[in-house]
Structures are given as structure tokens and as C-alpha cells.
Image (tube, rainbow, N blue to C red):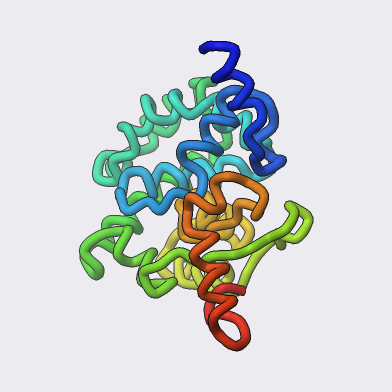
Length: 216
């Protein structure tokens, strides 16, 4: 990387949580908040967000390749077939979070994903139908303005739990929605907020009386 390019990169304004670690910056710049419609990727994010509970996201990113290797690259059909012997194998491998409840929930959730496919055709069709097919565009001025949960995440959590999913509380669901691009929660000073549709949302808001429904 040239000094000019490095300077331009360092000068880019990002969400404060991205920090300085290269893997966190790459995740922020390339993945977080980008609308995902790939079932494997969505299942991966849901699994990783559940695994993060009580831990830092940087810890989970450091174990991501281990998860991909041990969880069949997040193929729900393959994970749904995992048995007690496989669970024991997973819990013996330090490349993932060795928590029995979290590991078991990933298998339970894979089976729930297959049930959703029977009804909706795909996981992504079900998830995006919960927000009428388009990302919720927020305009947070600072990270402090981002709440722990929003009504859409509470509703998604309730529906997933009803369908047999585990480790899908409202806070986890909100983090998942942010990661999967169902919500644009980059702060307005972050270059990704504009790239992911925030500026368009602002223009619409300025042209209409009141707020835009569904963006709280």
C-alpha cells in the first residue's frame, strides 16, 4: 500500500466501533450493514451473533474460519444432521467458542432454517418479509444514539423463538439485523452510511412531512 493510499484510508471516517484492527476495519467496510440475501451467509451471521453473547465481536471474528471449517461452511442441511458425537467433537476444538448451549443452538437453528425453507422457500425470504423487503434506514448522529434493541428486532426475536430458534433474543436479533444489512446503523459521519442508502433516506425525509414509517 502506498503512503498516499494509506493516508486516504486512515483519513476515512468510520463508525467508532471499527477500531484500528485490520480485521475489524475490513468487516466494517466490506460486510457490516450490506444487505445479505444468501442463506448460508445469513445462517452464519445468526450463528456468530449467538456465539458472541458475553464476548467481543473481535473474538468471534478471530474464530470465524474455525466456525466455517467445523460447521460445514454454514450449510444448514449439513449442520442439521450433526449428532451428539459431532457435538463432542466441536466442543473439543478451541477454534470455536466451546459452549455446549451455543453449539447445540446452532444445530437446532439449522433445523429451524430447513423448516422455514419449507414454508417460505428460503431463509432470506422469511427474514426480509419481516421488514417488507427493504433495509430500515436510520440516521444516528453518534454511536450513543444507537439503542440496545428496536421494535423490529423484538418482533423478529418473538417470531424466531416461536419457530424453534434459540439464542435469538431481541438484542442478538438487532445485532444480526445490523450485520445482515436489514438495518443501516452506520452513523451519519461514516462513509458507509451514505454508500448504503442513508443519504437517499435523508432526502426522502426532507421532502415528506414527518418521519418515514418503519425507520424508528
